Length: 126
Image (tube, rainbow, N blue to C red; front, top):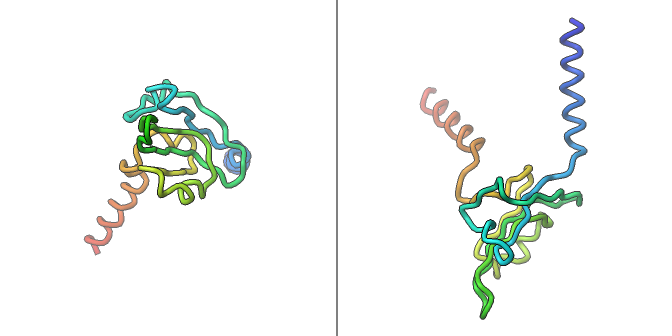
């Protein structure tokens, strides 16, 4: 019984300690480095910690404007950032999981895929 109590305490503490950590995001721009372009090799990208409240990991694609080439930017941004710059971005997302700004937004998360599969299975079974 003591082992179960210790395991439960460790589980609760790990949840509390995790919530105090900062959000970690990839940070780059394709103007400075072609490593930021899609498809990205995330193992080569720098990371930053987002400590601000209501901030997340940004991935933004900007169109070419005049002499400035199209570009990709990754880093920290306010959750509402993309709503403000929707009209000037080809693509813009702010996500709130560690290192979530590496891939294209068109790729569904494994969680959404798994939950959808379970729902469909249960729907057709009953």
